[in-house]
Image (tube, rainbow, N blue to C red; front, side, top):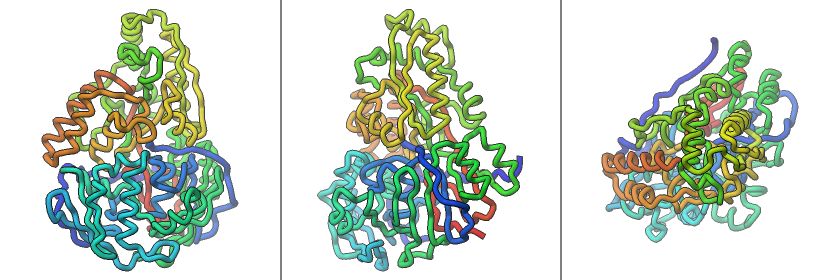
Amino acid sequence: MKKRKTSWTLVLLTSLMVLGACGSGGQDPTDSSGGNVSGGASSDPNVLVVASGADPVTLDIHQTNDQATTRVARQIYETLIKQTNDLELVPGLATEWEEIEENLYEFKLREDVVFHNGEAMTASDVAYTLRRAVDSPSISHIIGSIDPDTIEVIDDHTIHIGTNGAFGPFLTHLAHPAVGILSEKAVEEAGEDYGISSVVGTGPFEFVEWVTGSHVTLDRFDDHWDEPAGMERIEFRTITDSSVRLIELESGTVDIVYDIAPSDNEKVEENDELTLLATENLGTEYLGFNVRNDTPLQEVGVRRAIAHAIDVESIIQTVHMGIGTQMSGPINELVFGYNENLEATPYDVELAKELLAEAGYPDGGFSLSLYVGDNNQERIRVSQVVSAALEELGITVEVNQMEWGAFLDAAAAGEPDMFLLGWTTITTDADYGLYPLFHSSSFGEAGNRTFYHNERVDELLDAARSTSDQEERLAYYHEAQEIINDEMPWVYLQTRENVSGIRNWVQGFEHHPTGSYFLDTVSKN
């Protein structure tokens, strides 16, 4: 098939990183949700129209960690260190950094950076941002290695930041989109309205408006410290239905569509006016079990039975049109810490029935709720497959499709017995792929929506955070994954690809392996 662009070479920087000096130098839960189509044809050469399936939850990056938010926020906020499309760490708002003593770093900041409100960015804003991030239940797992007591403003453009002991992926975590630098003045003045009607960063685009369920509009920030963005305006349109997104792309009313449905790939490839861009993704899809609710899912035998009853390969072929690989563990092979010795759970209905009988449920005879976001058509189809598979075991599944933000809130509160989600290990390091999802300190909105708790897993994940010896860390992560596999709080589904459809008049658009893309280099001709 034609015009299918694929490609980037993944370098596992985390495993090779030298936490030393750096001079100057040259991004769910990850998914989307829906709403309405707004506006007319995308004929204005100065306006980029991007369609995705989800509204942001909020544009306060300390209050959520979902991809729909990150994809917009990444244009507004900037981090001290930037992670490029090749996963290289380069200077962002910091020009250089060095470890001045054990676990203490000095960062030099750019002197020509202003916020969208006209205020100069200083080290005080950086200190405010990091302390606020550490206190946030939603993202503290990302930046929790920082010891707030060590944050010291030396002058307007120099800051010291220390960690609670050795932490290998520290610099990579500082490049996470959720650690974009905020304006202390803007946040404090806006109060509870910050992230909704007031949004201020230092990035190449500034916030204009957000009409919930319709669109978010950003304008080029002409006082940006770096090269000016290629577009004068970006409009992010929220369109729930993937087929409607495709129609809008084909008609030219949008320029870029994120997350082309697998069933639509061929339609894009065969259209001479469009290009399909498909690249590897650092994420995984999973079915989560709430092991805290008073249901049979508290028993590992029931969880294993359900896992064996789900034909993941069939899901890959029929729902995802052959895109993806069945997972054998919670992180994919592109992530440092991946355990290649784990084996995928085989599809075996008879074994599933035996395991269910051994657990005391020979005929099933119970009901479970399954929540899924209404934004992702593939996950909705998977929910139907899961429901049918469990019906064969005598288990009744009540599927509840919910608006994306409400779904995340419900799962974080522990409402569903089961849920379908994905996670992107943005940092390429197992800490980010395991700690938020399986450590008991991360219950709820931080990521552990299964409420899984194993003391040994906690110990291993803590130990891996406390050393920079990569071989030691690898051993800790391998053992943790083996325990998690044995206790099965998830059914591992498949790896993902980033797949976008673009009009051929769009230039300079590239994927980032995390699924959240930089748009400042994009132009139209």
